[in-house]
Figure (cartoon, rainbow, N blue to C red):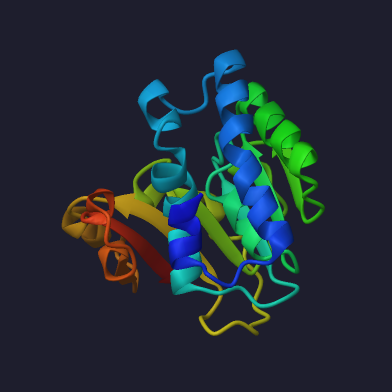
Length: 207
């Protein structure tokens, strides 16, 4: 929990409480339904929660922003972002029902009211309903773009144009060339000093 407060010192007491509950909740649910690796449960706050919040360093969502989290798994990056931005709305989708159950149980336990989780493939989500699409390395960027390109509407009111905010790691040169779209790559090592973030990035694809 201290690593979250280190980089986000202005949390409300409610947010601190919610973030603080995540460690025990994910440890419990991971024993029932494996949503993160056993090793990563011990590093949950750094490798999952803070990693998810890397998107917040790039794009602090304004109130009333609508965000779709595609392939959320156990709720990353959507759950940490929903805690940090209580005035925005988050729709988390994954094709695997048991993972969505974990998201629902965790959200209910910490009292998140700005998040809904649904077992659904990204292609079946309604078109033109969101400001931003977020995700964490569910596939290569080109097919991902194909899944979500119709899901973003044209009304702009955030500091960045509506689009995709994608958490990826490693050398993305070939993947970005394959995508063939205008992108901006933000290095998470510019925001977080831990070794884990040395190769981690947020790829922004404006629509």
